[in-house]
Length: 79
Image (tube, rainbow, N blue to C red; front, side):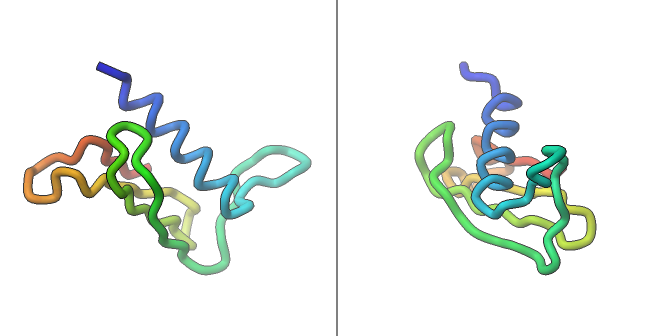
């Protein structure tokens, strides 16, 4: 079974790159002025993954929609 931690880190990095949330000179993650939300293909199962980037601290929260009716989805995190 693939390591969910690696999928999570890869996905967080992709989201930050997509929304230009890295300081180009230092590589440090940036906090957006407004909350960002979106969706992408889940890297683990291929279903839809919804995410949100906080405008308070820049943390990214994400959840795969594959098993919405169950207690846990295949990929789910809160930084």
